[in-house]
Length: 289
Image 1: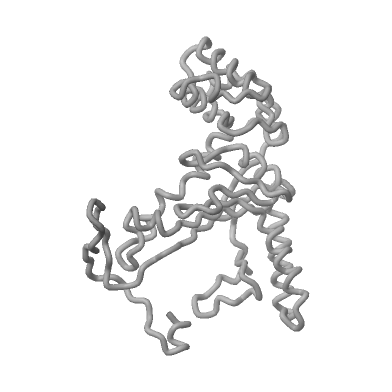
Image 2 (image 1 turned 135 degrees about the vertical axis):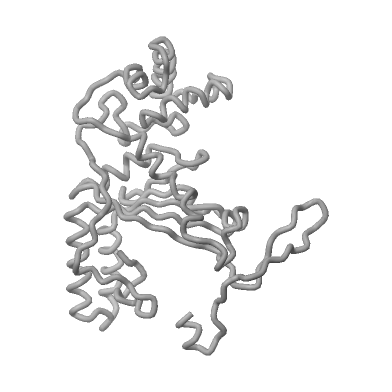
């Protein structure tokens, strides 16, 4: 609102009353308020995965569909993966924060007199910190269709907690990608250990279909719909998604991991400049760590 005030424009106001909007015959009515409407909102969280492990973590996560069969897109540089990039519902992204800051800084340095020395020192200190901690940022962009479907578009009538249930897809995927150091196990024994199956026979059946998938078979052509989703659900519990084409560069199914990647919440350093609403241009570019 301080920007609107600067240009003598009316401020965004909270909704206090709701009305049913008239819609075409046969369609349910929608709600409209007497205040501002949220058309898109972003939530971010920073993860610490360890120095030099950002690309490995992102590549591992890119082997998983998330939510309701949302497919991953791993960028060629290996530093970004997103799910449902062009969706009008929700877009989710993981990216290496240090890499992103460096790319923005390169562009900004090409502009004359755009970066003050103290700003440059601060940004480079921030990049160094992100590299040493191995910072991967998780970002969720909730779009207009989702917001309206769940009545989250009415500014003033929703709280931050109302959005939380829509932000769990990455957390749920990470919970299936737990790892142990150099622990060799067959797929069948991993399924049993995870509680995905009740018997060794069930485990061996699912493992046989996994082997077919590993050799390039599209299991949708082999199994009926219910069987496919049954085996898919079992394998997702050990971090394998047969809904995706097998890619050996992203996963090693019988070696649960050759190296532990511990994901921790990022500690904010005491020198970090928290953006202030009316002074949010701490950095000379759009990315804010």
